[in-house]
Length: 355
Image (cartoon, rainbow, N blue to C red; front, side, top):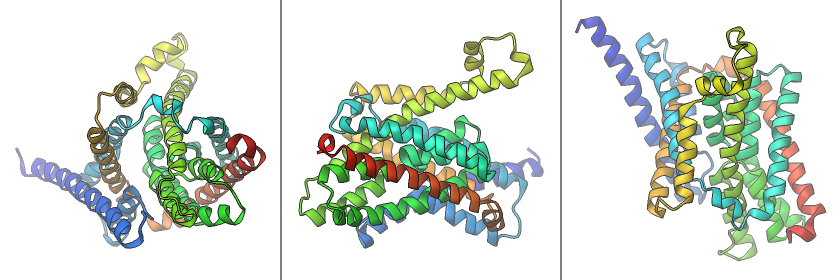
């Protein structure tokens, strides 16, 4: 092997190892947040993204080989993280204790994507970014963004902008909702509906629920996480829906496929990691994975997403965030407000149903 080939090999390998290390350390920082603050304020993937963005802007330049390694991480680790996450989901969750919130969750999913796509178009935000913002707001923040980004083939900067938009308003919701809903006189069930349906990241829901538990003096209250579990399971159906939408669009846009039917196009363009994602969810539904196994898969998924976002961050310049990222953040704010208002209105109007 020539010296040049060795340089390419080691440059790419160094980037991959560095992203893995940063991903691991980022997840450790979330554990430290729980110790110091009693909750996770910034999830591991967002920490990894911010750290490597700082590196990217401090370093004068990076080699082509290093960029190839970060690209590998941002694509492959997202795929593997999605597959691992599938093993933590269960179709049975839809029939669980959070099933009463299913009408609100479905309404919010439709509303979130509709607002994101409509307002995103008005603001001049790319369709991919709008889809990621809509998915992150509707389902489960960074996990939904990571999953959908591979289906729609989003660019690294589109992922970063969507993550930033979701993180900002998710943090605001997690800190404010327990106090706001207590001030409004909402019942525990109403809190569960709103927090579980309108706070994005699962760790943020857990943090808000912990605050609310201390406020009502009931450490056994788990309503918000039960609703969030049902909402997270919707990622399976949303991912499949966007897979078919992308495949249909591919058929429409490709002149070569005019004589092909939609199923042949889907067969060619269907991302295999989504098939594995659904299969893993199915295996968990029938009880193949123990509680320990599900916990392990959850940690693997978060680690892989963090390593993937570390790869994304190495390509994002701060000047691009300020020149191109403000509109996606504004879009995230509008979408978040619409979903929040819908959730509050549902809990108030249908208080008899919610309990």
